[in-house]
Length: 141
Image 1 (cartoon, rainbow, N blue to C red):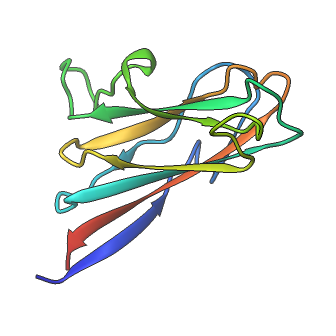
Image 2 (cartoon, rainbow, N blue to C red; image 1 turned 90 degrees about the horizontal axis):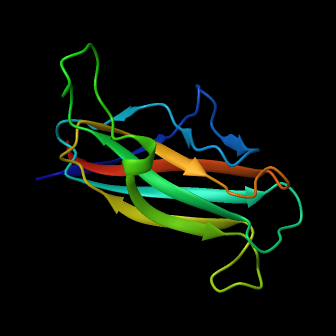
Image 3 (cartoon, helix red, strand yellow; image 1 turned 60 degrees about the horizontal axis):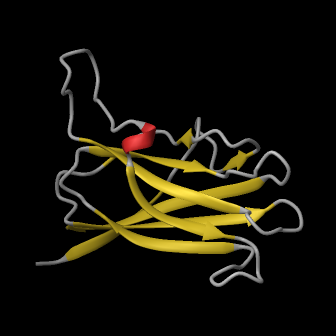
C-alpha cells in the first residue's frame, strides 16, 4: 500500500510561533488527526531570545482529546496540569543536555481525535523563549 507523509505546523492563535514571556503555560490551537493517520512525530524547537542562563527550560506537554466527554458542546482536552508530559528542552549550553536553539522529536499517539501542545518556561519572565512546533504523520494515499 502506498503512503504519504503530511507535515503540519502547530499554531498559537494562528501564529507560527509563541514567545513565552511568563511562567504561565500556553496551549496551542487544536490540531486534529486525520482518521487514516497511523503514525505521528512531534518536533518542538525552542530559541532563547537572549543569552541563556541556568534554568532556561521549556516543558512540553500534549493535551489529547478523544471527543466530547462531558456532554457540553465541543471536544474536551486534558487539562494543562494533566496533559501528557513529553519532555523538557534546556537552552543553557553548559547543562547536559543543553543547547540554544534546541529541538526535541517525540512520537504521538494517533488514536486520539486531536491534541493541543502545552508549553511553559518557568524563568521566561526574565528571558523570553520562542517556541515553534510541527508534526509529520503517515497515512495511506
